[in-house]
Length: 137
Image (cartoon, rainbow, N blue to C red; front, top):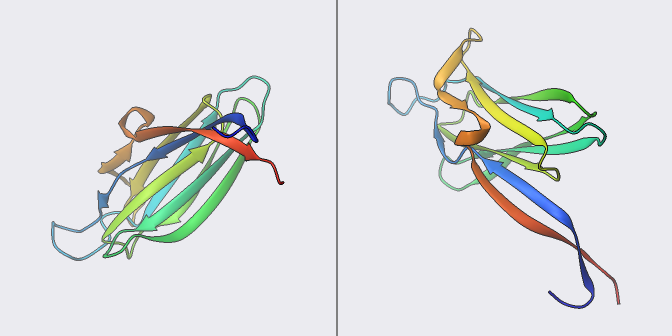
C-alpha cells in the first residue's frame, strides 16, 4: 500500500457464478423469466447499500442491468431482474458491510421458484477486497 492510500473498509462481492438458463437442456432460454435478488441488512444502526449487477454470459460477458438497494437498519429489499432471453447469466452483489446477507431466486413465467436457480448466501462465491481512498496530489 502506498503512503497516500488509506484503507476505508472492505468491499464484499458475492456471485452466483455462471448459471445455465435453458429449457429442457437445449439452447432455448427461459427456464427462469426473472431472478429476485434479495438483500437483508442485519445492522442495528447503519444503513447499507447493495449494488446488484446482472451479466449476460451468452458468448462474451456483458453487463445488462444494475440495481442499487439502500437498506435501513434491520430491513430487507429486493430487485427483479429479467433473464428471460439469457441462455447463461451471472448475478453479482456488491456491498460494503459484512452484516448484509444476500440471495438470488430464479422464477419461471408463472412465478414459481426454479430450484436449480436458487442461491443462498452460503452457496454464493464470496470475495472480500480492501477499499482504499486515493488522495489527489
